[in-house]
Amino acid sequence: MSLPDQPTPAPVALNLGDCDYPPAVARLLGSKAPKTLHCRGNLTLLGKPAVGFCGSRKASAKGLGVAADCATQLVKSGFVVASGYAAGVDYTAHQAALEAGGSTIMVLPEGIEHFRVRKTLVADWDWNRVLVISQFPPSTSWKAYHAMARNTLIIALSRAMIVIEAGATGGTLHAGLSTLKMGLPLYVVEYGDMPNEAPGNAELIAKGGFAVRKNPQLGLANIEPIRLAASKPLVVSTMQCATLPLALAT
Image 1: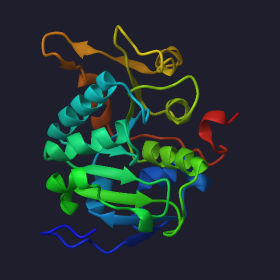
Image 2 (image 1 turned 180 degrees about the horizontal axis):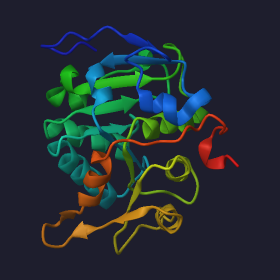
Image 3 (image 1 turned 45 degrees about the horizontal axis):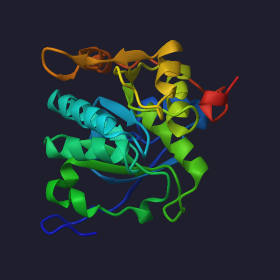
């Protein structure tokens, strides 16, 4: 899709070993790192600290509100939002980031040739503040297991991850467990009336995730711990001996 006042940038392929290939992805995933990343948009976003978002396609209205709140606060503090391009939490985080004048990285579970700018994002779309990225060959169609691999890439691109609402099983819970396995900070939304559809949040907190609660004075999510964690230089140990999917590795 061509936007009225901005040409669509040409795709760029970053190969493992190239100077522009994100070093954290190579170091975190080791021999499991994608050999090629297909990108469209502002590559400089790969060099900025990002916070990843993961959550259900069918998140509650409250969960979507928390996702938008966190994304807005983070981009106003200079962080990049990273997430998938699915409905629900992913889309809400991207939309909030763009509406707030921030930047976002959209990680696809399919080839980059399938990407289209959604009509509801056109008004705030700016290729200077967006990077679309895929680890799959450009014409690859969507597959469920591609979404799992996509989540692993989101984690590796991020300094910290936020889980909004995770089910008892499924991709969001898997992403949270993978974040813990990779040794990155995991922040999990917790509020008094958690929906029945989000039992995975309590499990992730019990296994080492940090609870994200509302600041009662401000009426907003308390993201100060996330800001602090995402501001620190990334120190990682290689995952080259791990098998994928990471959450199931032994």
